[in-house]
Image (cartoon, rainbow, N blue to C red; front, side, top):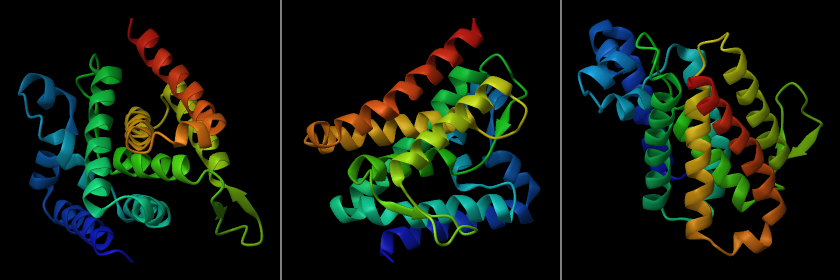
Length: 215
């Protein structure tokens, strides 16, 4: 495993664990719409990305990062990887503000924005990467299929608003992962144009849903 990936996962586990042990710290680090907009505590947009609700939340985010990060690290330096990850976390916070700014009670934690950025960066680089579900060990499917299912799930979640998952953060992270990867590797536009278009269309629909809902 790449050293920078170990460091990112290690920091996330440590911050999450400290948050579970210290409720005051947890409340200070989480994304809190009222605190961000009214008290200008913008640092929460970053710190909330290293905090998780429970061990399962932490495990699934870090497992997804573990699966997709090596693809990104094969073509980009560790520094670029970290920049994409941090930028995606911040973009997740920005999209959360856009989508939930009229809901001062809204709070969120989790690395979903950053992980989404790495997931979609990897899909842009290697759309046919073979993936396998734990409960279907003999069935492989390409990464672009996962991307479409992931976006469809987020679209449904944004429309229903019946869970506490940060679907807006997924959207923000996904956008940054795609945009930064294409900016750094413009040759992908010709190589994987059909996959890029396939990801951008549902993202555009999700953005429209968010803007329309807030009017």
